[in-house]
Length: 71
Image (cartoon, rainbow, N blue to C red; front, side):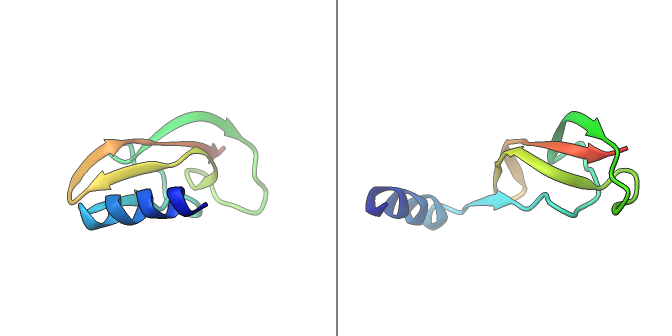
């Protein structure tokens, strides 16, 4: 746990931050849709699940968040 926290702190110090995806509208510039699924409690196009966290550094996306989108 200590090594993971130290690594995250180092990345944060370099300006790398996670992309918040859950509950957000799908944005192809930040998200990669892996699948769609019916979600009666969410409107179409909203991210309802996150398969893999994405990261950005400033305005540059380092890795797109892999997400599940409401159908």
